[in-house]
Image 1 (cartoon, rainbow, N blue to C red):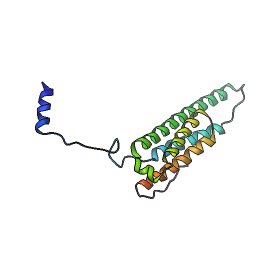
Image 2 (cartoon, rainbow, N blue to C red):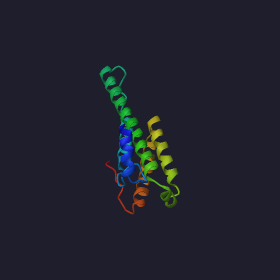
Image 3 (spheres, rainbow, N blue to C red):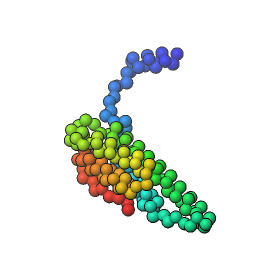
Image 4 (cartoon, helix red, strand yellow):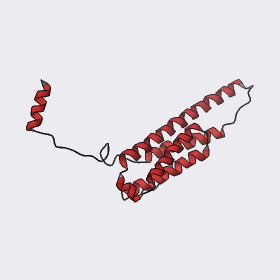
Length: 157
């Protein structure tokens, strides 16, 4: 019954067709969230590499070490996944063929960035964390150039 009423209303007052070039209203995309997650990956990687392993016979220090190490790993992996998610949403939802024409390396930059997110999760590597940040910076520059704006890239650390 309700379906018939809605169909009748739609025939008399049809809703206009709408078209969007992205999943949400323009202006909501920004690579900053990927940068922040990438910075957390880099920070946790540095912290993990700097932790000294205590003597095995110091039970309290050893427990504290393992707890801290596990927490830093969890944060690093969570933030690497978040960075990848943010980058993939930007890549698949914001960038269009016209952007690819202006930036022929666009797909490769995003692919490399996504691969660095995975590598930063799998390994404890300062190189991967720094490479991730370098790719995010490239994406930042490409993104803002598509909007005709110069936005300075900065990091919190």
